[in-house]
Image (cartoon, rainbow, N blue to C red; front, side, top):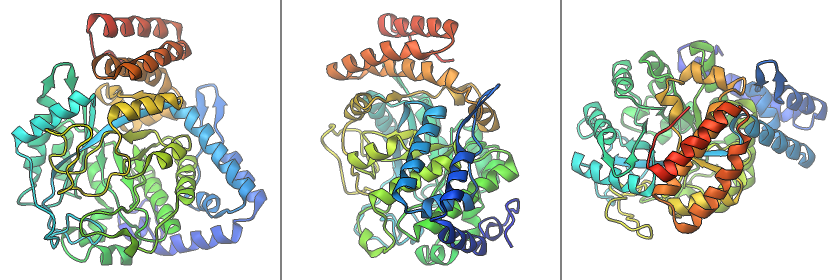
Length: 483
């Protein structure tokens, strides 16, 4: 039976409820009166405290996703853009993945790291190699990493992950420093999540892959990840371990996208109902080609238009969450969805173990890649592209370092107050990037953007202080100012 507050996976991700939701959505996909009312319900509203948004339930949002009326789709896109602007403005947070090890004991049929793949060489970074990778990433300009590792209790125990985090935070190279480490590793225990919390991680990220239990068990035929309940209930254990920023995601293309969409939103509703705070981020990866993996064998692939619709509907349903798109997607696809809800993207990414150190921007090793990288531009090229498109690339990590996480972040975000911090912080971290790492053309474009955008900080006192900080960053070599 469906129970959003249950701690049992098959209760809060309930198959009968999802099927009833999809039937309701199909029945009402041309109900213009209902759709208009849902759009109005989800529209940002100004209050005495700022801007508030109600979001939509999984059933309501599924109606929007099912709707195939062109004029309604345009209204859905317009509302997604309005919500994105209200809470995230034009800021796009930058990050990069760092692959630590591709040893894995699972048999996931969509991932080249599966234990039966004999084509891929296995590699695990030493701490010296972690240091080399981090310095290479710092020299690109990155401040935020997402560390990745296969599931292998012998080769990749929690102690190894913790040691890597300690190494990453310890490295200060020239003006470089990794200020935030997000962690994407396999489901683990409350005790291990507490250790990750104590290590100072940012967000704990775990993709569900698919919420359809039967499909999940077929796609994960052996290994610890085969346990659907243990995997699906991981976020509750992470919260119990003290991690209040968690990131959800499904791998679109494994199962029917409407089922995954409903399950994803039900998971977000569950976290809000039980822990008082929903997911900090939602990722939307699609199955991609990789060693020993042909994505065409999965017959649930989605086209770019459907992908964009999913992103817009997630933004409307969960207005406050950060939304992530990686270099799995190419430039044109990423350009299409930026305004519909995406607030974080990767740049200059390598999905190989040891893929950064010793390689130029034009070189990339393929032997240990987890998936093909569709957007192979350098970080500088991505930053310049964003600015030319009217976006503000942000390397900010201030909220996490100031303790604005979990319900404290959401409390500010839900009334639009987080922008009083985010806009100047984004500009100051962009100025750091421009001064230390950018090409001449990128620096010129960026400084013109900063000069315009700093005037949009509404609070005069904060605006004037930010202008002073920008001058000190550019002319005096000072770093790491934050509001």
